[in-house]
Length: 418
Image (cartoon, rainbow, N blue to C red; front, side, top):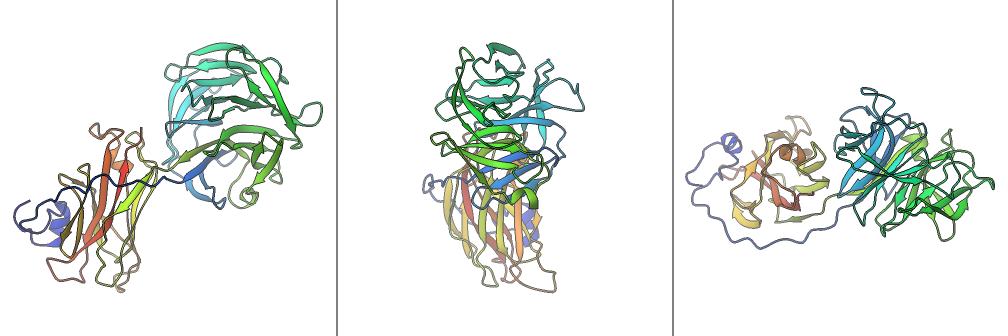
């Protein structure tokens, strides 16, 4: 970039144009190590109508995803390659026909992938075998393999060896074993758990657990290999999540307060997803009030999701403008206007955002810049899964004399998910 641009506002509008003459890039220090993202439990509720994202560390629903109200009657969820799929009915289409859909965990919206073109009476469930990548479903106690693109059903066969009429949930363990609970109490007053042979649809009983009256709506395995089920007892006294130990055939109720304080209705579909791995690097510039901005990235980054990967900077001067600079040129760190430029040209910029915070009558570090990076990527064919991206915020800091009246955060390095 050649030439000096006068005026910070003009500088922001032109991606900072780097506001200084004679700037040259330095060799990239190479890929930075990425820290694994945090695993969350996503779930829908029978009466709430919204998708929730639950922090497994404290059991709180950290965010109610409110992009759209749930326009689909969810039966169950499953995940594949960090994307979430479900099966259910939609009131705007034929309400008697089941649809396979993909749920955008960033804003709660969904996209119908295929109609199964059949009506099934009983609650229904799907999951993807993590070993083979094949999708299976149980509808009216019949095991099917599903082509999610066309909706075609390939019959494996009626499930034999299990209690009929209550096979409402299924889930695959990490080794590809398919498990099914009997959804309704058996003759011994227990819910029976089975493993299912995917070639013959034969069920083999593992053991039983006494839940009391109610039904299991969905089943999923977390990253540690632990089985979780969503249970509906009617009143919230026993509804919620249970972690199942198949060795001892015991159930531990997880986060019981969630159902009286946060949500309405018992949990229906459940699925585990891990936030995208990322790594913060490069030193931030301490601002004119003595505050060092703190950068964070949260969510699942994907060019196929409309929302869901927030890059934010806190501890920022209030009521100041900023942009997110981003590129795929690799990490770097170049001294620049009292701070460090951490993204390698050529780069692009988000729209200008305001930090908000306290009113203009106060000067403090209550500001926050935030950009949903998925909203930038969505629909752009040049940004593909597997690409490494670096991003940092650049903004105004009127407490410094020009040309150094700028703010620079540290940077984040991440990879676009498939």
